[in-house]
Structure formats: structure tokens, C-alpha cells
Image (cartoon, rainbow, N blue to C red):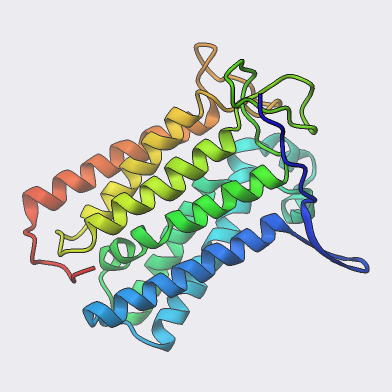
Length: 267
């Protein structure tokens, strides 16, 4: 068993103002997306430059924050919202959903595409390889905060999470960091290093994230107020990943049957 590194989840404390590591990880994710995106734009002479790309990142960040909160309320704790609708705005209580954040980003990029006259899937294909760094950073934030721990286990790398109980558990946050963050980034960055058909990068992101998340959910403790939703092992996270994987497969099939490798901007 490995010792859980007790890191204060509050990175900076200035009187009543407390800056948590989880919040800093959001900034790391947005900053990494901006930096990587600028590199791609300069290298491949892409059509969105300067202020336009900065606006795109702003739209995406807003989609993550608003969609993530709405998604958590809708998918994971709708009953509490019905009891107290104002709880939707109690972001200090925590509660963000990746799937909700993804829907928020999709809507934000669709609005941005309409406003600026870009093809929607050109934007999502461009954004796909920029996203995993933020996902990985978020999982590190979960680990530092000692939240979203794994199921009890006897593997040698198990850890006891103080906010859970005295049982050794899977550090599932680190599994997600490695798969949804590092590995998915490597796959997508390599895949988009050369021209691909429109929708291909978007489809690969959906399939990759959905598959990795579905697998990690087998080791992650389900939300206590939800538990397993079917067959004594299916979680809400897995149910939300199924349509992701199916949609991603459809986009990949359409990309390679209706397009050609030269019909979209090089990534």
C-alpha cells in the first residue's frame, strides 16, 4: 500500500480568500489549451488568429464552467435541485460534470462558429487535441483534494483517502489522469499532426474519452447517493459514456466514407 500524500487542497489563503488547487487546475487547462492552440495556428497557418482564437478559448471556458455545473445538477443530483433550485448556483459546494462541460463547450463552439462564419466541425476538430491536458489537470486536482476516490482493493499501489474511510482504495483519479489526460493527448496530438477528414478528430476524441472513462469507472467508487444504476456495476458515468462512444464512431465512419484526407484544415 502506498501512503496518500496529504497536500492541503487550499493552495493560497489570503484572509477569507482561499484558492484551491482544483481551481488552479482549471487555469492550467485553459492556459495549456491557449498555448498549444497558438502553436498549431502559427505552424499550420490556420484561419483563426489573435483575438479570434482568444475569443474561442473564452467561449470554451464559459461552456466548461456553465455546462459542467448544469450537467452535475442534471445528471447527478437533480433531486436536490428540485428541493432547492437556488442550489444550482451554490458552486462553493462543489459539483462539476465532465459530460455537462462537454455539452457546454459544444454549444459554445456552435455559437462561436455561427457568429464568426466558421464550419462547426473545423472548430471541434481543432479543439479536440487541446482538451485532454485540461482533463488530466482536473483529475490531479481531484487527487490533491482527496475526492472521487476508487473502490476498495488490495493492489500494492492502493491508498487510504482520509475523506473516505480506512479502506485501501484504487487511486482512480490517477488512472483518469494517465488515460483521459496523458494518453488521450498523445493519441490526438499525433493523429492531428497531419490533415484528416473533417469530423475525424472530433470522433476520435469522443471514442477515446468515452472508452477510457468507461473502463476507469470499473475502479472508481460510484457517487454514494446514486450507487450502481444497473447490474450491480453500471455507474452514471458509464451510462453517459455510451452515447459518446456511439456518436464518436458515427463521426469517424462519416469522416472516412464521405470525406477525403484533404477536405479540412491541417491541424
